[in-house]
Each structure stands twice: as C-alpha cells, then as structure tokens.
Length: 162
Image 1 (tube, rainbow, N blue to C red):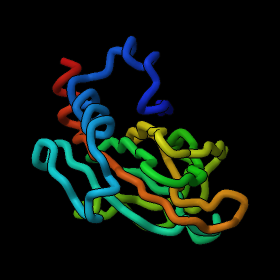
Image 2 (image 1 turned 90 degrees about the vertical axis):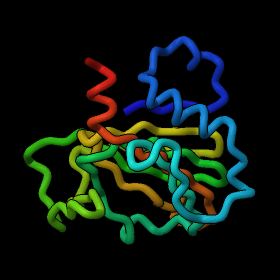
Image 3 (image 1 turned 60 degrees about the horizontal axis):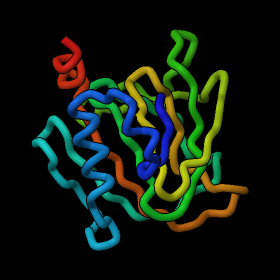
C-alpha cells in the first residue's frame, strides 16, 4: 500500500510504473466536480476510473474486500473517510466468495487492522494483497464524499515490471 497527496511535490522523485503515472496524472488533471458518477476509460479495460458520490457509512455497514485482477488507486476528490486495512494472510476468512465478474471478495474482518483517513486530495494505492474496508464514516458521522477509484489491471503492472 502507498498513501500520498496528489499534489505532493516529493512524490515526483518516486519511480512509479507507467500505468501508475497515467493514473496519477489523470487524477491530478481532472476536475471531478464536473463529471457525473460512472466509469471513465483511460486505457480501455486496462486502466479506468469510477467516479462515485455517496455518504460515508458507520463501520458496521462496511465490509473488508480485495480484488484479484485490478489494483485500486483510491482518490478522495471531496470529503473524507476512514479506510481499514490489513495485509493478506491465509488466516483471513472470506464472508463472500470471490466474484470473478465483479473482481471482488469480501472478508469477515481485518486482522490485524490498521486504519487511515483518506482526506481530500489524498490517494491510496491498494494491490490485491491489500485487504481494505473503504467508505467508513469519521467519528461515526456519515458525510458526503466524492471519490474516484482508478483500476489498473494487475497483468499490465506485471508486464511493465518485466
């Protein structure tokens, strides 16, 4: 997992893959307040963004999840939320089996759990080994957010590393 600010000048010295650079550039250069909710292609099914407006929720209404085909770059355009996190271990128990079409599996709980605040202008890169529980309200007080999730195909990232 990587956490950072989209406007942090220190991030320029980090060597991201070309696909990750495309995702971060898209997030830096797009005014999401002018876009409707929905999917926006950056590079077909290999890199795309989903824009969502919603209310953050009480923690008990949120479920830990992970993906197998895509890495997430979760970006908070407006608002803030907690995201729970833990690294994948075989001890984690699935609550809902992997859905290949939706590329998602849900878990009973994060163990051990760490939390961080995804605030306006910040992003988190989450790989398939990063179990995460997004959408959690700060101080149990639901609030509106505008979040963008850029999906990057894992096979594209692996191809770029060769």
